[in-house]
Length: 559
Image 1 (cartoon, rainbow, N blue to C red):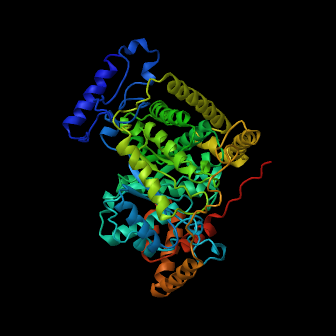
Image 2: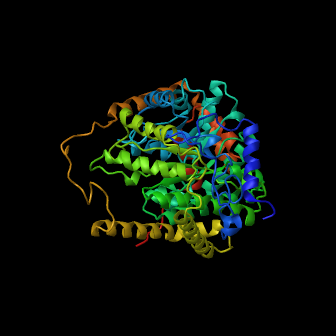
Image 3: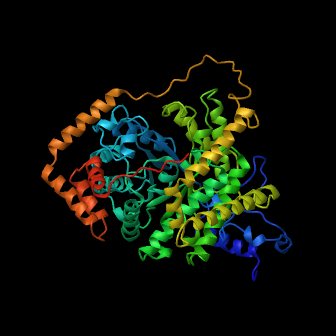
């Protein structure tokens, strides 16, 4: 090293301090002892491989993206919420924001996730049950009524029909009078993880990738702060993968989206910062922290060495975290508060940029208002009372944490090599598509899930209240859970029918037909899709037109 890493960090920190980018807060322990913003070795040369650890704010970002850590800015407190109709969910959003939430995260119901209208026969009994029903841009108007979209970061967890739903969000913002170029938020859009784990696709992979490429270009040119893809490992982990598999499959998907951008002739320095990530925070505390640290290091190195990114902004991995839904138990559900707190703390110590904490009752139903508030307060207690935000990467240099970080990185690199070998041209994209076609990813995840389940049944792994310590003093106490009335579906369908009669039907159908025509060219489809949405074309009408054009997809059988 030509310059001591500590000195480089100090220069970065001092610059941030001078620029007013350090929060004015109490940086002392509960006992009043002042703590430094970061800690490191007295002699860097005495630590073998220290350049792989380094200091926060410098390549390879193992210890975080910013020299200031959370002294510069706390993570965004998000709560994943959506149920019933847009009006009901709007009320929950206003409660979350009023209680100190820093951003919104939209959960959609199953018909919306599959690109179906609420009155589609296949939507029967599902409207509003696992999220909010969205059929047209008017639903988005109601969903964000009284919420300034220009001033609120909004995440939307949807992949298959992500682009038309995003267009509805943009139209709602237009109707608010917002400057669309100033919007900030994240759209999931990650179709690879649907084929790998969650199974909510609409078309074969290639048409989905075409739409994603169009979205990347549109956002880079028109909405620079908005992140059009949130590469999702969460659902891969929830399906039963190991931590290393979650990390490797997710980053491999991310590399494929980088390859997509490059294939479009886009500048990696421009589009790579628009890629964000979404990870699971599971209950194995130190393994999760190591996973997050390894993720940043791997991404930075691959973006620089493989894809040619030269700026720090393009090399940095930014991620949202959600605590592990799969770790929640129906037995002794109050224990879920503890699990969520531990998982949330791991995400914070791992350096997450935003965080969602699950509610204790989500294993049974959508969260009640009380359970949602407890989940929100969990993050706020961590932020305000524990002192963990005072020091950047406080576990950096721990022998255990560094060894775990190195080991997860090693496992991930082995998986990357396997994926690339499956392809025909050495790209990550080719390997992923072959792995999807062969059912390799689903088979690997199934093996991992089976191994864990077998360990549970043998008692090698313990889950309190399930296979150990099953006694409870309130065994007969029943949780009051949120139930979505069937009336929601009846009312949503009636409203949808009325909207169809109020709109200019010929204009809506013509706009959808024009969108399909654009899809047959190399022209970007987003503007044409926006026109269809402005004409109040429904989500189902847009997606059905594309299904008719591009066909459906059936995953391969694997035994």
